[in-house]
Image 1: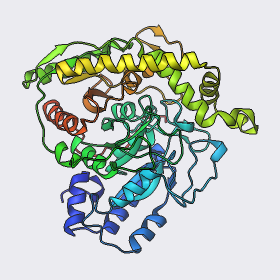
Image 2 (image 1 turned 30 degrees about the vertical axis):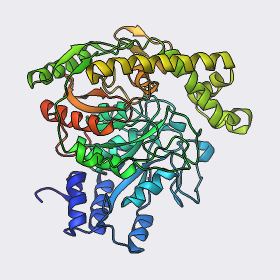
Image 3 (image 1 turned 135 degrees about the horizontal axis):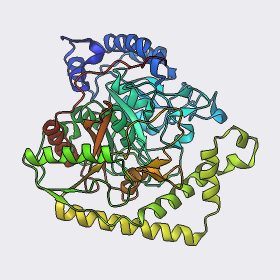
Image 4 (image 1 turned 90 degrees about the vertical axis):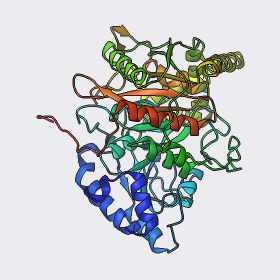
Length: 472
């Protein structure tokens, strides 16, 4: 190896582990050293559990035949890890220590993942800037004055800085894809039911899904392979066909055709971001891709998503605003819950119809063109002190959710989507390209994303050290 162990890609790490050329303990030690060096600068992993990780390794068992082989993986602080503080970024649960792990964590550990940390998240994953009153703010390593987005901001920063080769995230509105775009890495939102969820949350909902973040498409495929499985305890979980996501991600395939809409026909977007995306699409065309400008009719997506999101918040957290816990909640969480409690059955029925219309429109376009590409986020990283983006391209937005439409317009359809890096702003900040595929075609999506990654040449080859401007 010509670089530190922590800087290797996940596919290489897993290969070395399975071959016995390094031990899981070697890799865990290297990870701990890297975390000690950079985490104080970015606050991505507020809770560390290296002792638990070493105990699991000490329990014995040969991991060399598993998918990850003993690879260290952080888990988002909205998912329970047995015996590890799990706060949801909320003062309500600031000292909570669960006695059992979520289904996702069980899947990761069964696949040879070694959980060593919890990654930071906004309170109850509400909002796309990663800060909370328990652990404070997470900073973007490209410029620590700026936000890494959210809600999987801690996971994205950990991956970008080499504290993890693969991290677990979750995506409700945009919570894997926006942080990936802001941090210059890859993030995958899979179809509902691919990765098991529970036992908490709202059973059977399709908006929030779990997915991997990594520095390459190949590593992202390996992460999905480790997380995906059938689990009958999750009502949306599907029996898994014999699909090797990791292999698909290592086999680039040029798409038959790509539909292109920089803004999905519904989003405000900064001109500089649109220009970077358009140039990336031209590079794909130069490399042989057939691109057709086309957008699905997603005009019903906004109301449908806002309504179903509010309904889910009220279902999951509604009891918190009627008791003493209310004073511990941030305004955005209270607003989400209150919006949900105001809903009528007619509102929810209309939202379900809007969701169906949006899905049908996108599926029609994908049937014709195969895949859809668009901007992954409408802006680049913004000052970390700003709670959310309130103005885009000169237009003042109506609510704190409005800048998330490039993410949630896809969320509402149930289609899988991946973000890959595609260029930089004049200030040197990463810009992400979003690729959307038909439901349950993750293998094909990974192969096409791998081809686009090669064609664009923007993959993060080596983790970055946090860049702190003078005066911070």
